[in-house]
Amino acid sequence: MAENVVKMGGSSEKKNLSGEQRLGEFLGKNRKALVCFLLVVVAAIVAYAVFFNVSTSIVKKNLDKIERIEYSLTKDAAALDESALASRRDTALSNLDPYLGKGGIVGARADMLAADIYGQKKEWEKSKEFWLKAASKGRGSYIVSLSDFNAAAACEELGQADEALALYEKVSADKDFVNRSRAAFNVGRVKESKGDYEGAASAYEGIASYGYSNDEWNDMAKTRLLDLKNKGLVK
Image 1: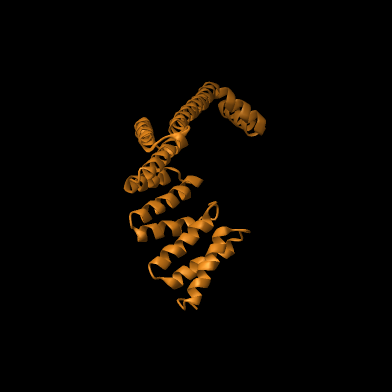
Image 2: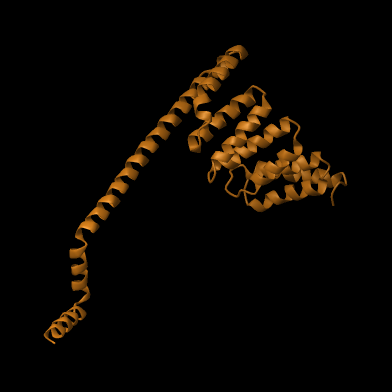
């Protein structure tokens, strides 16, 4: 009987413990486990901070190297003959090679420079290839639309009007792209060259809705639209 009374008394005391007392009792019993857990968390945070700082430093160093490659390519280029320029381009492409396979901003930046160089060399298939690679690595940034726009230009050089049109239409849908009206004008221009005059007119008319003031591409679009109407190709 006495045993029952002791047990009941112990149970009653536990029931009457406050929330703060219960927390203290829990912490006391699990102190070692909690300390180990906190140490693991702190170690993980420190490891991530070190990794982030190292990664950021590596990215910056690689971008600096790519910038130096570009500088070596363009420094006093206006004074060089074609033979010297060709030599610089080949050297730049060779120096870029270690960065072309990388992902993220480093790979995208290297791809963009390579695409530009191949464009200077009139190697449009290669230029297109690297512009599209840059776009695939620059997700969520201005790089995507800029690279797609230039890839579209390369497609036109290759006579790939349908692919160029698809890329121009994609870019013209990007409200944040600085050359959006130019992309839309190119949509109209390519459609016009394909004989799709109604589609061209629609693209030209749409530029006005972008709300840009003193936009030369909107002015050119109005001129093209007027010409199409005067020729009776659209209403």
